[in-house]
Image 1 (cartoon, rainbow, N blue to C red):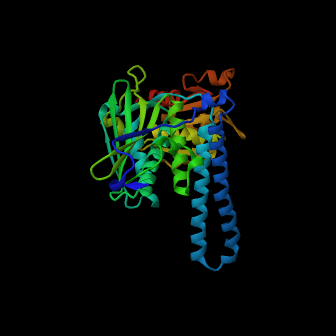
Image 2: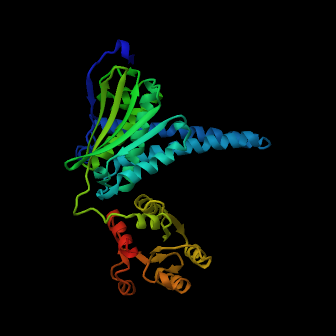
Image 3: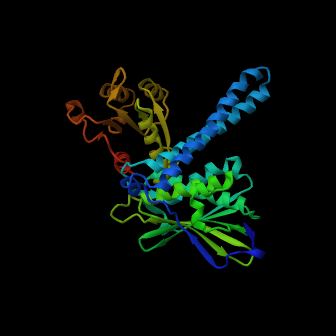
Length: 392
């Protein structure tokens, strides 16, 4: 890495990933680069696992020292989060699930991600500014995958800033409309520059340090997400009078007029800020996925995962509830019977309890239409059904 006084490159440089997207890779039995990347992630997962095992073995010997117990507990939690994020990245690289391209609010997603990152220690002393034009506010993406792309883009800029010794510690986020695309960009200014070809930054095998490995992994995963949605993704270096500007740009597909969901006015936004939704489903993965989609789609909504008993207690307490999503088949419970019991507690919910099932032959469920969602359904169908039911 060189500073601005002795820079190796001047003007503008652009780097793009050499990796094929997931669909192309699978048709070619996983090309060598993608396969190597997957092995790298799997190896990296072993590091925090080993750390957790070591820390856990130390805890019993510190039983009388509450301060050390608290310290080790925090370290265990940090390592566990590393595993979670690495596994999440591995999942996105290997996933062959068809994407559900739905209108998604870029502004809301960026604001939420910024809020969460600002609470993390890694972003202490870092400033994140946002400038998104109204015409670039909605894009065609999946809500949770857009959040991951935004989060990784911000992490990448922070890592570049740390690696190349930025003085400002400021990340600028912009989005503007260009025909059928939304140009989403994150920027950081530095004093130094990368000596190598920028495309090599996507190659974890070429990384020389833990920081550059983390940067390469984030770039590779963000690129994989972008490609899955047919979007171009690149990193650009621009020489300035004081140093270098690094831009990470994703060319997102703009939400089309025919697909755009009804816009939310001030009155509706106020109502969704206190929106309370209960999800009753015994499959944790399904319930958690529904929760994430709803939270990313309705700003400020409170989504609670419940057992049948929890849902009843919630309504008995008089707590707010705008909608209930209930699975038909629950352990020891009939979803239809639970629906009846919930309506007895709250008659106003009779038109706001949506049943979920994969059984289209059930007569008792058919009688409840249109308050039924047949599995599997995508994110777009879920959000449209919720808006329709709540009159949003």
